[in-house]
Length: 239
Image 1: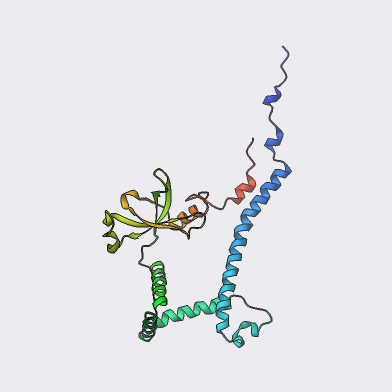
Image 2 (image 1 turned 45 degrees about the horizontal axis):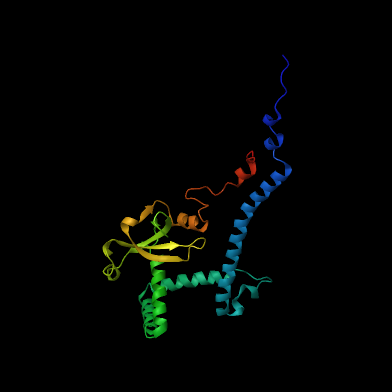
């Protein structure tokens, strides 16, 4: 009995088993982009921040004391170093009685200025809350049903409602303040109070929650970011 010729529809295409030169070139380009883009953006932002601080601090120092006066090339970061030393020295002076007295005298002057007083108090309270070691602001991540029931959004849990606010709300003792960030910029969003029973806490860090929002859900909590080697070595899936 003569064997039948193979069906061409069942034949395996060799171009699917071994990627073409164009496919490999595209994959290598994407791998290089994944590696280079974060480094370039991080370096650009860091460089901008260093130059920004230098532009603020260096004019306060006589030019005769700049490293540029002794070296044939400019030294970036000199203003940043001076700023860090100045802030540390200010914190050291504030810790003793003399420094605390001077700070209180300056705040007393600011408290007599109508517009500046409110701005200074608000900004100071925000910084004290953010950098306080015992604070609880934005230490947890949760989810609430927003913008409508059945749709869940990531929120950062702040603190319980203050007595002045809780007394004006129904079930005020059970209200929690949350901040709902907007994607892809988590620094903007909405702040509102929600009942605790309507809030679902999520066992992820605030950093992971911010990444989830900034990536619009592409970077999931616990996902490994460094996969560029696998991208370069794994052949494309057959169509």
